Image (cartoon, rainbow, N blue to C red; front, side, top):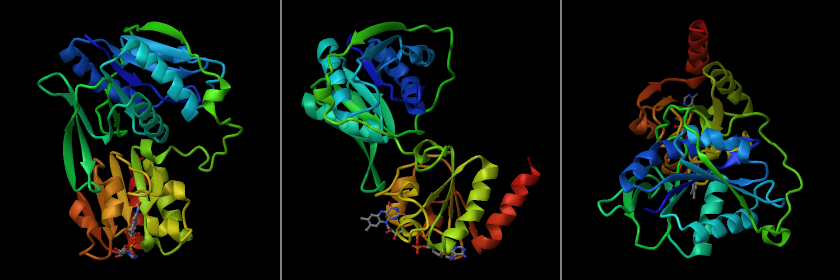
Length: 327
Ligand SMILES: Cc1cc2nc3c(=O)[nH]c(=O)nc-3n(C[C@H](O)[C@H](O)[C@H](O)COP(=O)(O)OP(=O)(O)OC[C@H]3O[C@@H](n4cnc5c(N)ncnc54)[C@H](O)[C@@H]3O)c2cc1C
């Protein structure tokens, strides 16, 4: 039976959690289809990360390396992955819907001439053994179940933090297959000269378990200080609505929503955010939503699991103090 592949994105020598999440659920799919579950690492010096993929269920890990495959480039990674897909012919290839995962999956699908379901929140197989995925449409107003034609491979990108992460089993050792990629500097087309971090060591919003977000109700950039304090005691990070970003109160990298980041934390605390459809498109699949807003009619309350109708400048610092008492 043809294999199920998971592209394992990595950064600074660490595999992104979403790859482990996909492997955790794809294990059941591979069990049903009878094909092996494989992971693909691309870069240089990646072999050391293979064992971790095995512990989440990858039976085989392809380590695709070339001197010109250091940091991620669309052209280089597309060539490396397409060559391997054409050689090994997997049935299914799954990616994390991170920024690079979205970029790579779209380019690979285009190069191979196959379809791609993006930003999925569920993966499975239909009764014919084809990949069947669930994905939000119309800014999260409806979910579509999508099946694929018989073209191969069937490809999808999966939203981080939505699939259930299994416990790793370190006794599982994957078969490691080294592949020398035929990638030259001409394929990469661009050269990465320097990475300038804007958010310091802050966890990327798309990977955060707890997000405390603020909107226009924060009144100004200094208002976000109380959100930083709450996020600090909760072990989370701060996000923002577009209104707060457009006002210059927060960097664009903090924006949650349709034209910002799509996030799925375990806890999303929305402070002074009305809950526009565009904001909900970015955080509506959060596992628990708490809203603080002085307007009882604010649409965010329709989506929230818990709501506080009051002045956030009174509620947020008091809540921070209560959390501190528990620590
Ligand atoms: C194409 C397009 C794309 C967009 N993309 C995005 C996107 O990605 N993300 C996004 O967020 N928006 C996006 N928007 C903008 C969106 O439509 C809204 O304008 C925006 O989300 C509003 O932000 P807000 O909720 O912070 O502000 P407002 O809608 O002004 O809400 C502020 C809220 O704060 C409350 N409030 C005020 N003071 C207090 C207080 N002291 N205590 C408690 N509550 C208080 C008010 O009651 C109000 O509900 C997009 C719009 C378009 C057209």
